Image (cartoon, rainbow, N blue to C red; front, side):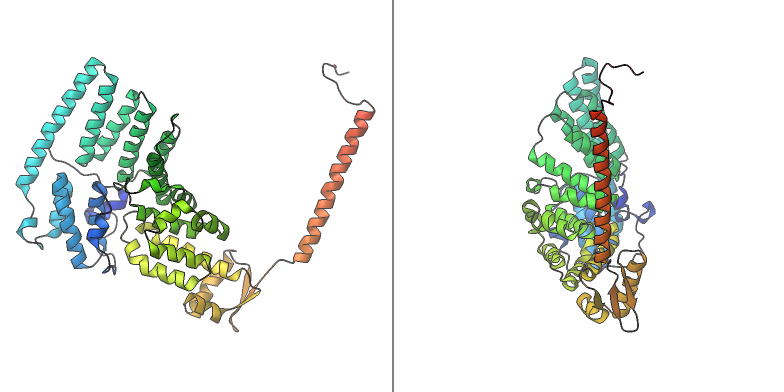
Amino acid sequence: MDVEFEIPAAAAAAVTNGLGGVEASAAPLSAEQLDVEAYAAQYFGRTRLLRLLFIAERCGVESIELDALRMAHDEARNREDTQLYRDASHRINGRLGPLYRYDQGWVDSVNRRAEQRKEKLENELNGYRTNLIKESIRMGYNDIGDFYYGHGHLSEAFKSYIRTRDYCTTSKHVVQMCTHVILVSIQLGQFAHVTNYVSKAEQTQDELDAVIVAKLRAAAGLAYLETKKYKLAARKFLETGPELGNNYSEVMAPQDVAVYGALCALASFDRSDLKSKVIDNSSFRNFLELVPEVRELVNDFYSSRYGSCLQHLEKLKPNFLLDIYLHEHVESLYKDIRHKAIIQYTLPFISVDLNTMADAFKTPVAMLEKELAALITENKIKARIDSHNKILYARHADQRNATFQRALQTGSEFERDVKAMLLRANLMKHDFNQKPGQRKM
C-alpha cells in the first residue's frame, strides 16, 4: 500500500517545497540557541515529526537542520510513517551517513503490513455492521480512524471518526468523537471544524473532565490564533486550566499556551485586562512560570518598561519564527504590541519629547516619528507632531466644554422624562385610559 501523507497548511513548508508554503529561499534565521532535542521532547506523535521537519526547513543553521532531520528520520521509522520517512531521508541526502539513507525495502515491508492490517480492520467492521452491534461498530470506526491517522491518511481518518457519531450512546462517546475530529482537523489545518467540534463537546449534558476542558480551551485558542482573532485566542488560552499539563502534547506543550496566550494578550488587551486576566490570573501564571522570558516581557509591558519589553521580544523572535503555528503571526503580533506600547506611552502626557521617547523605546527618532505619524493618520493617537522641535503635542478634548455639554444633555433628558410622567398622570386622573376588556368607541 502506498501511504500518502496529507500535509496541514501550517506545516507544508516543513516537508517539500513542491507542496507550497515557505520557499527554500526564505531568509535563514539565527537560531543557534535552540536545543532541538529538548524542544522535541515536549511533543508526542505526529506533531513532533511535523515540528522537527518545520525547524529543519526554516532554521538556516546546518547543524540544527541535520539534528532535526536525524530525529525526524528516527521518529518516522519508529512510527512506521513511510511518507515522512521518505521526506526526511531525501532531505538528509546522505549527509548523515549510510544509516540514514532511504531504504525502499523497509518502506515496501511496512506498506504490505499496513495493507494487511487495513483489510483485517475492514473485515471486522463489516462483521459488526452485519450484527448491528452499535458499540462494536463505533469502536470499529475508531480503530480504522486510528489506522488512517497513524499512516497519514488524514481525510480518511476524519471521515472514519465522523462516522462514529451515529453510534455514540453516551456523552463520553460524543466527547471522544469530538476530540478525535479536533485533533485531525488541526493536522489538516481546517480550523473551522476545530471551533465547531469544540462547541459540540462543550454542549454535552454530562460534566466534562478538567483535562478535557483544558484541551478544548487550548484547541479553541489555537483555532482563533490561526484565524487571526487574537483577542478571542488570548481569552481561550487564558482560560486553559493547569490540568492541561503534558496531556495535550500531540498538539501543543504547556509552554506554547504561555507563549501564544501572552503574545495575543499583549497585542489585543488594554491595560486593565492585562492586569486582571494575565498578571493576576493564578491559573495562567502556572504556564508563564514555564517560560520566564515571556513572563518578564509581560511584566515589563505592564510596568511601562517598553524598551526592555521590545528587546525581550526581539531576542525571542528567532525561536518564535520556528514555531509551526505561530510563525505566520509573529510580524503581525509584534507590530500590534509595539503600536500599543507607543499609544500607552503617549496617553498621560500633554506633550512628549521625541528624543526622550526614542531613548525609552531604544529606536531612532526618525523611525519613531514615522510610526507616530502613521498612528495619528489612523486616528489611533490624537496628537500633532512638531517635526522641527521633535515634540508630540496631544490633542486632548476640552474637558470643561465636554462637562457642560453632558450637563445640558442630562437636563434635556430629565425634562423629557418629567413631561412624560406628568402626561401619564393627567391621563390616568381624567380616566383617559383603556381598561382590559373595554371596547373602543
